[in-house]
Amino acid sequence: MEPGHNHVPSECSRIAPVLSRIGDKWTILVVMLLGEGPMRFNELRRRVGGISQRMLTLTVRGLERDGFVTRTVFPTIPPRVDYELTPLGHSLLTPIQHLGNWALQNIALIEDAQRRFDQASGQNAAARSPVPAAGMNVSK
Image (cartoon, rainbow, N blue to C red; front, side, top):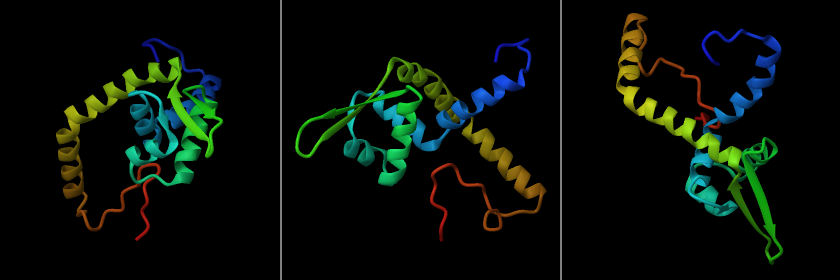
């Protein structure tokens, strides 16, 4: 939002699903990888690492539905499917890269703040129950 922009609840309800999609852990990784060029499903899955076939399918379908990715099926046996960023998907690369760079530049400050908070609240690392990031497997 631009400075001085008025808060319009109806706009927030339209934007929230988009921000949820592009803020998802898997979406960020998929968009970054597809920024290198078109990729087949299994290559994308190997490169992402740790993602289930179902989760990758849901992620690329959502990205396709939102206009960030195109899916091309080639009539071979077995069928070959390539995924590629659209111009809209390519426009998302810059903000994602800026956010990643910001995180790298500030991770030490964030971790320091977390340690101070945990010490002040009497928590230790073993006692904390962090909220997992989207797509993370937290089963023990």
